[in-house]
Length: 136
Image (spheres, rainbow, N blue to C red):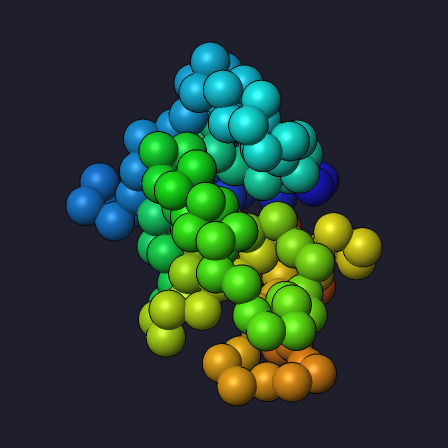
């Protein structure tokens, strides 16, 4: 993520109401999560540490306190033929579908309910997703 984007995201984030954002994650909390679930993608790790999580556009992005529960839930929800998306989960959309960062492309994706083959691409990157959600 470009440093200018990080600065703008942080500025826009801090101007938001506290009711729609989680507290920033501590380094200890991030490390504890990573011990159980593996590394957090770099740009999302920055977001958790600097901003915390909360409403972005029409979606809620998990804060560090919600993230472990979401990962456990997602791992426990087995689809008969498996999940199509190989992503790092960052939250649940308004329809209760998990969405996250595609591990291969960095895109933000969601696997729609009932889809046998498709994932929906919500954004080309976490940077674009955050900027669009905070500016629109």
